[in-house]
Length: 341
Image (tube, one colour):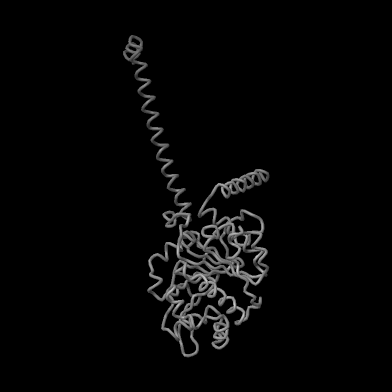
């Protein structure tokens, strides 16, 4: 030990070099440990946020020109509470190809939308009642809108005002089909077994999950759905509501069956938003339906947001404004927590 001390006193530069070397090695090891911790934390963060951006991260959040006519059905009883959030969120993907049908005051939409889209608002003059004739009256209007614009579109996709539609995913999904050559009726059933009635067994896609019809199919069934009164009278004759009647026509008259889209989701799927351990259904969902307690388990970003749709849209397609709202929300949580401590 004395020899070591003697050597260090005699050669102080050697002593300094040893200290510097030790510090460098120690610093390197510390940085390595920190990096490993960051990698682990990043993996955990990615796992946490894999709730979103699993498959849809490769899909652009902007939608170029496409051949899909989107129709949203609303009513005088719900348009003021449900349509503003849709207009703020998924409507913005493709306003130039989106039409809205309502039996309510169209001036409500004239105040909400740019003048260039006012002709996309269609007044149905259908009753508000939830009877077979009234439901089919609304559906007939959707078919009418398509045939008024058929030269521009190869698809008609119709939705209700209690749905979120991931339009970029919808556009990407429909690319696999040939709408001018295939008779396509695409949706998702709400029943576990085919509908039985009038000597037939057939699957029907519930309108609450969204439905898409190809151009060739719409031309094939034109005489069954136009003019509007013909479709309504057919519903009354079959005693089926609109979504069931269209499936019945296709199967009974044309031997065309439902093409099931597993990523279309409706409000009847009671466990849709509860399986948070394997929640790929949110990120990969093309459509989502909401009703009552069956909504995403997110905190509302805005007051009176019935279906938490702003939060969902922000997490799927974040922008500067909604990220600002999330920061404000987090600050409120922080302040509330510390007040309680």
